[in-house]
Image (cartoon, rainbow, N blue to C red; front, side, top):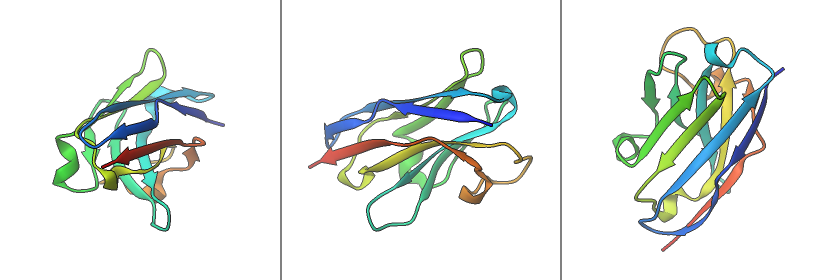
Length: 126
């Protein structure tokens, strides 16, 4: 069983920054693919970014995210982070930290993630 607890969400104005954190417990964290998934009201879940145990990263919602958003992890502290810069109102969503315990290869997809946190709300005003 894996437990994930997110923090760092909040309300910011467009152009601002937030750093989301996720504390992971209950599993061999360093072996897991980790990711951030967001869901805006009335919209489907979007896989924002993923990071492998070795630090390889994937950004899944277009080139517009790759620059402003950065995923990272600290295997020694069982933590995952999402640095979000240049935030836009369309980035408003609930952001979930997630773990993919059985992923082994290929471009990560939302369905690969089998453990989720409770989410942290990000609201960006114009």
